[in-house]
Image 1 (tube, helix red, strand yellow):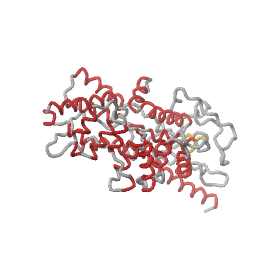
Image 2: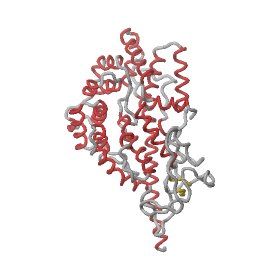
Image 3: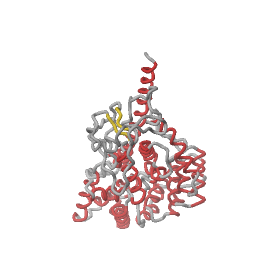
Image 4: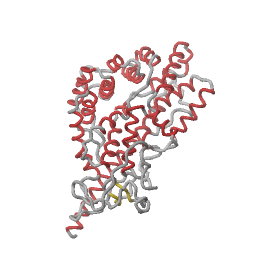
Length: 435
């Protein structure tokens, strides 16, 4: 084999590893909702417990609705429409190059058809600032075998770029003065997922720093992140005694804090159930970690790497480890509802979940509770209709072409919306806009 051929072969091998890493991340996102749905269905059955009705919460769509593990997504077009209100991405000048010296396309990759190019064919992908490349046919595209003059793959692509950006983002977050950015740094420290391994648990040193930061400052979001991380490692000492009780004291109006307390102290169920019934919101914080990190990404990180970073961080999101709903559903099921006080508490909890949930899964749980409590049909039917509409909506991240400039803009806009208003409001907004 010639030196050039050997270089190209090495590039293809590196590409395969990078594609596998992104595919793992994409499937992991799908599984986040799938496993939450399975947990919901599985934990409420058992001796003396009736199974969930057929109208139990379905798998919440999240950012990758309609993707099944291992399924290939055939490209359908040149990228998503630019998110409303965002400035256009800068055009790529003919003959220009990336900072690393790699040649880029002669047309703006965010608008290939407007520039006279046909839609991408299967296996072709448009990368913002890097042009059109051929991938290897998986559902998670990474640019392929257009070699540089020296052969091989541009180092700015795929898993290598994420590996290089990850510690820089951690460092940037840790250097900020606010507690939430520092907490995000400790949640990310040493936890970048790869093709060969899932994300590691929060390390002992990072968990101790996160716990100390939460206990010292009392910020509700930092306490939430720390309490959820510590709940996943109950036998570990670095948490400095932090528990869900610290979170409930800092944010007593958040149902999510009381749900975690119910998970940690199931024998004292009346207290957390009463706390949930009196709550005024159900905020599990989904998307806040990714949004916080996105705001700290150094300016010279390739724009398509921001998508990989967002995918990885949504997989690490503390909301993915949020408390299970099984204990709550068991408290509000069967003979327990014959007790008038219990029934009223469960009614109040369902009302909070239906009217004040930021995330889709808790909102769906609220509808399930409402059905068990036999709310009037004129109130239930609009909820069922809206649930079906939100869960069948299109993904806010274009899966067929996730790395175009328009797709990167849409991804970042979606993260900002999640942080500002939550998943349910974002999906409702997209539905109202016809997307």
